[in-house]
Length: 254
View 1 (spheres, one colour):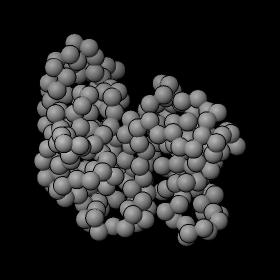
View 2: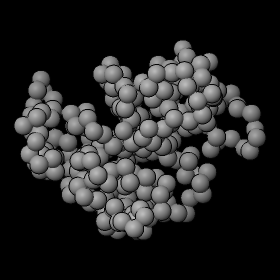
View 3: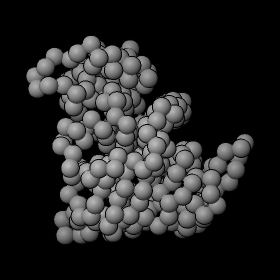
């Protein structure tokens, strides 16, 4: 999937009596990984939820060239897999059953899982190295283990659009590296990934970066572009600087 995956025009979101997203416009290219960064309160999560049609908004969002409001909930769930921030789920559900929830958009009402569903669940759990505890209740898992199960649930959907809010929460560095590999595999296969990240150095591994501040997109560009680095340094008030280290971009305290 190349070309344009997601587009937002004039996107505004009001929570309570306060407008938290102001006239946002952006284009997410297909078959690329786009990282969304910015200081706390910048509106990153709200924007992601609006793009995924999970929060009421004004303006226009298109997914895969089609107006997001034209998709049924089921159709949208087949095309866009969502991993939210601090999700928990039913603590007594077995890990495998949690991941199987990702297959619901593909199943008829009350139908038993098909062989295809079973294969998708196993594949996703092996990708996230969570297959070994498939028979354990979600509530018995550590924070990092639970996060890997929830990532597997998103992967099990098999959607071309993978949208993730703080997917690295509770993951140790080796499993953060594994997550990076999973995202790269998704993109290599023609999928599109969008992720909100607080880990700026990890975000700099993405193809594209959206920099947000005060409910607005202040910059969008390639992660290797000098203009992107300057925008990133500016929204964090000069408290970090982007450098190269061992041939990779890293963000270090300034």
